[in-house]
Length: 353
Image (cartoon, rainbow, N blue to C red; front, top):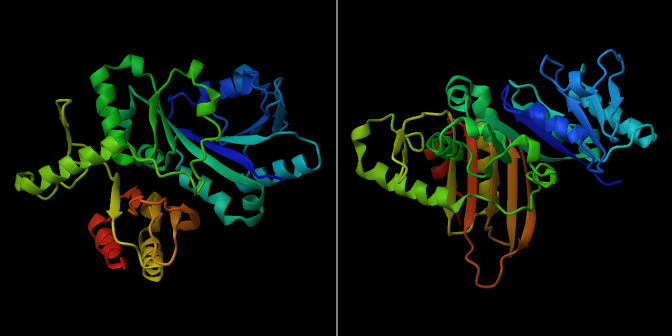
């Protein structure tokens, strides 16, 4: 039996998760989706679609979808669904988990790595974070959970952009990219986001290419150069929180604790040294490391080595061979809470052959 893909849907209250779910549950898309709701609050999808009187935890929708509410832990719910599917009592092809507005998606994602039975049945497809363009700047300032949700995302959907100016939208996108450069960001009206952009994104697939917006890197280098020539900002001007958005004319100084940085190296890595170093780093900083991913050039193999992790859990895999004439550059992106960039960079330098 092939693994059942799971999409984790996260985002702050009012960002549009419910609207997106209603669509998944009511549209005639021909897919059999089980939705797991991490809470049954006031603003959930029950009133419109579900018959709330039912004491049944699992409800069948008219279009073949299933909806369940979690009152126990996620693991038990996933095991229950898998058991019912095996016995032919329920038919579904994929799962969407809606987390609560204040949830940290980390523990939800970790469930799929830590439990063997779950890992043999399910596969995380991606974490999708919905961001409300109108309220996000304040939420990102005030709530670490909102910043963590951005850091974990494989795809960011921006809702309510019609309520803010183009310049405010630009400033927000700029800020989100600094927090998470590997998640594509797109503005959506939830009535019409194509399902192909919600499902099968393969964000957790080790062999997907490492997508980092090239403009982000260019801008990063500009800022880096700027930072080296201008120390008048004082110590707290640590990159990338000191954001100069070149060409947009906004100078905002969000010192977000969720930050990302990209490390590149032309020389190959020594596999044993790198494994020791990453192991040690994950041991110390794991709880603060939200997502990290890399495509590496290793001594002793003609193939790319792909690795990624969530918190303390890390995996690697052999990718495709380096093409003839292709520059063998290792590229890693780290997204986390106040990660010590200098320690990571110096340590990685020492792992090069």
